[in-house]
Image (cartoon, rainbow over all chains, first blue to last red; front, side, top):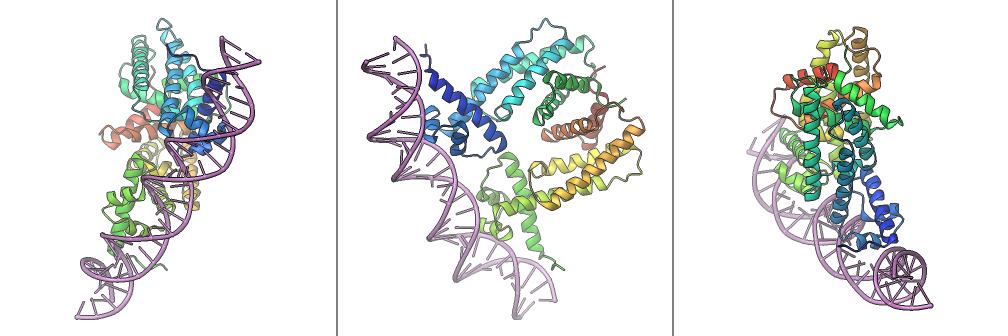
Length: 182
Length: 182
DNA sequence: CCTACTTGCAACAACGCTGATGCATGTCGT
DNA sequence: ACGACATGCATCAGCGTTGTTGCAAGTAGG
């Protein structure tokens, strides 16, 4: 089993990942030097913790994917669909608000792919239960409904307007189900 | 007044802009060499038509903004709000499908900013008429309604599924107004 | 037909970035 | 307290990219 990392190593790695998310969200082509500066460590330290730029980006994607998977798994399948939808939405928004760049970065990393496949399964299951209980209309294409859901999550997280996350989730779910028409 | 360009110059510039949109949509960091290869011209030719990479990207944004403005202006204010909404949506989708990268690229170019301001005005006017005639609910925040509209346009254009543009527009407007709930 | 312009080629300088190195100093965990 | 590890610094090589140049050959338009 892997030896536990020293506390200062753990702190440094977290600082680098957080800085990388912020800096790269603003400029995906930002240099390792800029990420290091934002982390408060030397560039050589970034290279010691993450051998290459690609390794750092992969670590970022893996970290975000783990938060994502945990956010979705925190809501039990047994919850009523509408309640579950609200809770999943709020949870995912929290992750998206903090790790938006990492979550949307395309990657071939298998751990990330596994998490995404798992989350997709959970989402399909939740949308099926929602349809079965009349929360979602039966005549709407399920793939399209999910794409609309993801688009609204993306839009809500992309330009947060300092509103409480639960209120953002409530508005999102309301718009998803009712639209903005009469 | 500017002298009309030679026909071969016009063809070359259009080929470069189209190739730039395709290549950069796939990889925003793609080199001038790759754009040139995709255009079917030499890299020196790209540099002769567009002095710098930045100049090329600006020209791309300006071109896309012009198509965008024209797409919105093609629908008269006098049209009933629901009809206008459908027509604007289909028109904007067509532009977005062809120039998605250029349209989402942030730029400080003043002509692009002017077009976007103009389009925003037209959209605000259309949404106000839609609210006044009951097409949109009066209790929905107008800014949020527009953000939802843009998010659905973005999602529809981002992963086109070979459906007729008018059908895509119809589905989009239906989802905007009714959501995917009961 | 002819002039002016366009384009391709090869080459070049300059630049920023990445990844790596050795050594001195600081920190962590037992 | 001490050994092992972490970190900062300065430096370096290698790389890809950008922007530029001169010249020969091709094309457009009057």
